[in-house]
Amino acid sequence: MVKIEAIIRPQRMDEVKATLDELGVLGMTVTEVRGSGKQKGYTQHYRGAEYTVNLIQKIKIEIVCEDSEKDSIVNAIVKSAKTGEIGDGKIFVTPVLDIVRIRTEERGINAI
Amino acid sequence: MQSNFSPADTAWVLVSTALVLLMIPGLALFYAGMTRVKNVLNVLMQSFVALSVVSVLWFSLGYSLSFDKGSTPFIGGFNYLFLNNVNQETFTLNGTSITVPHILFMSFQMMFAIITPALISGAIIDRMKFSAYVVFIALWSLFIYSPLAHLVWGEGGYFVGKALDFAGGTVVHISSGFSALALSILLGKRKLATNEDSRPHNLPMTLLGTGLLWFGWFGFNAGSALAANGLAAHALTTTHLAAATAGLVWLLIEWLTIKKPTALGFASGAVAGLVAITPGAGFVSPLSAIIIGAIVPMISYSMIKLKNKLGYDDSLDVFAVHGCGGLWGAVATGIFATKNVNSAGIDGLLTGNSSLIINQLTSAFVAAGLGLVGTTLIYYIVKTMFKSARVPDHQEQIGLDITQHGEEGLVLDK
Image 1 (spheres, each protein chain N blue to C red):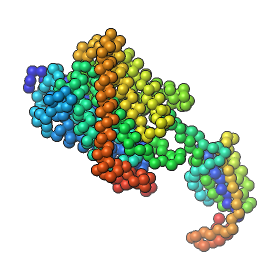
Image 2: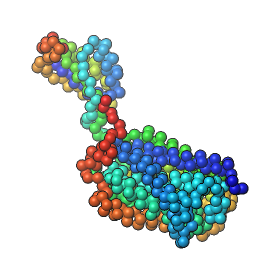
Image 3: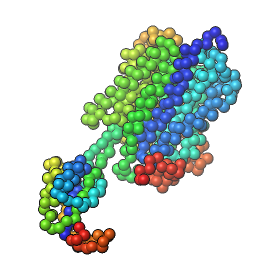
Image 4: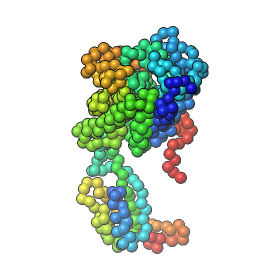
């Protein structure tokens, strides 16, 4: 079991969600996050005074799946989230030791 | 009714009074959109509370000190105390027969008295105790606004017939702008962390305020004709043209310097244009109004850049927009005024009279000086009364809505 953690542009969220729906991915957790990276910040002007926004709004999608599904899901996210410009985000894949479905107390694969 | 009573003039000044009243919520929204969400109610209240405080003062003492003929040309007397002798009859002011009821003129002027100290609040947002602010504007209204209104407009006032101020460029904007400069320096800067996000929290609110100010300013300037006549129509036109031009020029400056025309820049420009045309609205031609409106953004924008270098914290640029804009308006009136527009006016530099501009500068310096010195004195009185005029640092961090008013402006979590 792995956890796929994708940081994407907020503007691409609807497209990514549609692609994941198509793929039959049911479970995910989505949070609004802010972060910094190569994109750096951007400058805004208020009456001539500069303000640099260096923590940029992103969306984080977390999906836990079986190892065999990993590549298709990662590819689907890359395909739908990509614009080719700096700031498209990153995907992290990490192993998951255990899962518990709270309602039934099922564990492991059965709880996905 | 007396023979000179005019129903038409009275109707127009009644409407104008309501228009100027609407500028106070307009100003409140204009400022509040530029603050952070944790201080939005406090900033709104700094304008709204002036409605209550100054109205009661104006009724009891302020109007009399401003407009009654005093024993000197520098301050009014006590004949209009508690609106004694201010009734439904028409009256005469400095030899001019006023065709609306005296009590209406008093109310119209009350709206000007309310908005003037409220203008100062933009310079000191996010850090002044509400209690100290209330006492400050009360003392300011009595000891700075009333003497100045008397000097420029009052019966037998020193500058009457010498300097021109159609609707309050000197009395309202120079006085509040220079007072704002003094108070922001005396009170000190906001305690902001490095690169702390102090961006305006709601610019649509600021633009709504700008719209209300622009709308209300028609009453402020055109209403100052005190008649439903050609001069009122002229003042409305010059007012609108100056605001329109100034908004556009501010956008152009930003287009050239930072490559992006901002909404806040447009709002700032429009208000600066309205400020600059105020003293000359009923004395200068429409073309002059456009020139006045085109120049004021250059002055105010440069002043803001200079402020950022100097580092004092006139948070919402009251000095740059109202102080400097008002000063330019006073000078511009001395340049562009012509009796062709208003036979009751005085010719300016372009019409071959160089004495007006000297008097304009003198009255402007008196207003600026009174604002700077008076504000400093009142600040120390208030500081002594309340131990400190500022809220403690930890309260500043939490925000003034919770610490001063015990409520939140926008509750975002359900």
